[in-house]
Image 1 (tube, rainbow, N blue to C red):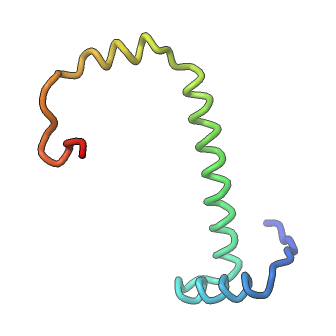
Image 2 (image 1 turned 45 degrees about the horizontal axis):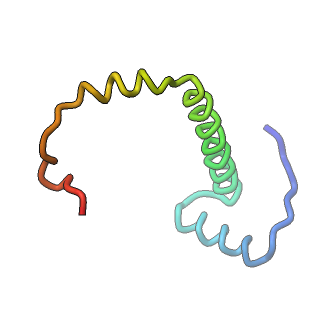
Length: 79
């Protein structure tokens, strides 16, 4: 495990302390979780971009053609 020092505005630190206390976790756990969530969002976006680059329009159209043409189900109508 690595220890780091970060500088935060006092207002941000106070908000983090309150949120961590409300969630029943330490400030360290709160910040580690927040950093992990941000990292996961970047990794997900990178993954989606790589996958999208592999896609082919003709494959999409082939599968779209398999969808039956009919009225929208209740609740799925366009407004």
